[in-house]
Length: 244
Ligand code: SAH
Image 1 (tube, rainbow, N blue to C red):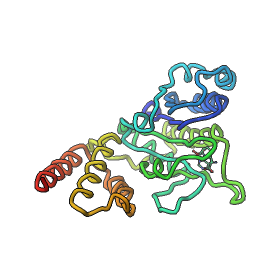
Image 2 (cartoon, rainbow, N blue to C red):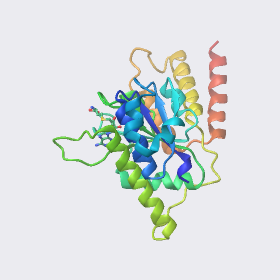
Image 3 (cartoon, helix red, strand yellow):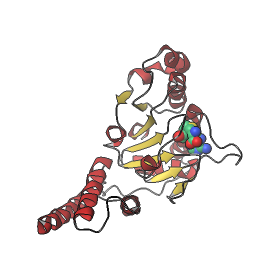
């Protein structure tokens, strides 16, 4: 179950935080780490802070873009201390952990995304996620250290996992008959929509008015299946042909 979960760090700047993340993960039974354009990696400081979790560093998947990191995820959870101006489905770590385990029980791939130390996740990255996870904090100081945020989320996941194994907690299981679309497929659909919306004059490229994030939010709510993505793309293709 836990093997269907990956932790994705976007542009981590301190190698120590990468090491501490690996340690936090291994303590809680998580093994899959993806690093998007890390500033310094591999690095001795990462190995030091990983302590006995350097195997996670050795197997880390290092990619250059956010797109590559999320491509084959079927669910994406973005973590952020601040709630953003554009409302998005927001969960506590406890609620998030429950959802994450219900998806992984039916073997769906889950990514949990963390932002860079300096500025966190961009609005654009957050709007690519299905849910936002926020660790409740004192309102005067809400930003945790990156690896500590990973620790808290991994902990919640592992506690739900233990309760499940002990039978003291049961999940509302996700539907395993659903062939959920991947982020790459949903991204392709969004790009196709954007292209067509501009082409038919439904959206002005300089004033997109949040059309694309709204559509993404709709697609997340609908839990789009592969087949549904194909239907919508087929439809858009014909709309495109009509216009030429
Ligand atoms: N300075 C940034 C915070 C970066 S902290 C900002 O103001 O947004 C690095 C990362 O740790 C964040 O991008 C987020 O992924 C995670 N994080 C920190 N505090 C968090 C919180 N309270 N809830 C959820 N994630 C948090």
